[in-house]
Amino acid sequence: MPVETRDVVVIGTGFGGSIPGYYLAAGGASVVMLERGPRLGTEEFTHDLQIGTYTRIVDLIRNDGVEVAAGNCVGGSSVVYFAASLRAPSFVFERSGTLGRRIWPATISRRTLDHWYERVERILPVSEQPWEQIPYAGGVWAAACSRAGHTCNPVPVAVDLGRCTNCNFMLNGCRFGAKRSMLLNYIPAAEACGAEIRPLHEVESIGPASTPGYRYAVNYLQLDPDDYRVSTGGGTIEAKLVILAAGAMGTPVILQRSAPLLGPMPAAVGRHFSPNGDRVSMALLDETKVHDLLGLERAPGVAYDAYFVGRPITTITYDYLDATLPEFERFSLEQIYFPPIVNIVPEDGIDGPPVWFGVDKRTLTSRWRSWLSVLHMTEDNNEGVFGPPPPTGNFVRISVAAGVGQITYQVSPETQRGFDLSDAATRAIVEKDGLGRHLLWLGDRNTLSAHPLSSCRMGDDPATSALDDRNELRGHPGIFVTDASAVPTSLCVNPSLTVAALAERASALLLRRAGDYGVTVAPGSARWW
Ligand SMILES: Cc1cc2nc3c(=O)[nH]c(=O)nc-3n(C[C@H](O)[C@H](O)[C@H](O)COP(=O)(O)OP(=O)(O)OC[C@H]3O[C@@H](n4cnc5c(N)ncnc54)[C@H](O)[C@@H]3O)c2cc1C
Image (tube, rainbow, N blue to C red):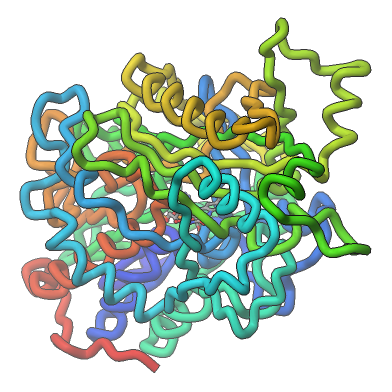
């Protein structure tokens, strides 16, 4: 059988894959996009929490020290994400961590990235949530911050607010077409330009091509739509350019597995992993105090527990994002609602060890409707390291939506400092005048994150970065990594807008040089419709 060939193979269809996939196809390159997950349309997303519906499109991956949620479908995590869309603060790009020198490439700063942020905000597009559309939970957090002397703002979201019904099923994919995932912009635009998307195609490795004029052979398995552990076939596509965008949990694993075929990988592949400094904690609010101190109460007769109706992320305080503070002391605090996939039980553990069963637990869960969860996004120390890859896939899949990954993540003292300070700040807000009790999420000792980053990061130093400042994999010309794994550090805000802005930037740089790889593209051919 003749080997299939394309100018470009894109691996993964989240932000990092869809954006370059579109620009290369718009330029006239032949593009195929391989995606391990299924393809669902707007009308197919469900409003239930049954195994086999939303669990088909999102994975929870347990590792040693960190637990990560990630999307698994055409559109990637943009389909299941909560759409909070923020630019990272300027100081993030100047970070040196414990490395002792600037981690980000010299060519990237907030100033140089603003142009690309602005472009993504326009294309998605991103909207400012007006206060009158902020659901109750966000209002309570904002009022609590204000009462404690802090500012709090609505979070910009990639949501068509006119269409949004505030259903709070964002994790399931948006059945109203309101969430501006890749399914509504870059992916249809790429397909309109001839890009082909192949769902249920899981890339395993990349090797050298055998066809003259082509550089790389991308090897994939086809997956059974009912059980992703079962393969129904496989194949190889040869390409002149490979865009690797399997997300921070997938990209390093594919590269590790490819090393025997392609030769040694840069040392930073599978190292410096960051869960974006994510830390979750919770307020157990006293409803009487909410009324007396904040002047707020739920509408009478609400059909559903009030804190959990509405978009999951609505308000944030930026007060601790102070560039003059030392590194590891800066963070944001955001109101968030966690759906049941993150089934972790909070405990204060203050008067003794956490109690998981019995009367205490029953008392706590009986007040579930008074829980308000807070996401802290801190400056972590890139401590995560990937172990050897599993035989196939990105992790060992133990059920449709759950897997065991290879990462070892041990919180360093620097990261712990950010956690402690952000805990103290949240506690001061929540416990002021007895408004509520601040509880930590101790049900699982693992750090919990939906924001995996940095596992194949960019930088100027070959010893500590896998990619150059144009996202090209060191030592392997023609492989470009454009997903969250390329982001060098935690960001102190939700990462998708930065992932997308960097992918926009990488696409523009690549289009100018595509001819060097034998791919002819017409400049200026991208447009929006
Ligand atoms: C529940 C949840 C809520 C979130 N909320 C927010 C938010 O509100 N704001 C925000 O900024 N960020 C949020 N995020 C994070 C954000 O979605 C990610 O940072 C972003 O999507 C990363 O983009 P990416 O392209 O790197 O990866 P992804 O979007 O995850 O895309 C990677 C794609 O590659 C595919 N893939 C993986 N391995 C393979 C393989 N071997 N072969 C083929 N395909 C493969 C995956 O199935 C996936 O489609 C959230 C994430 C989750 C899971």
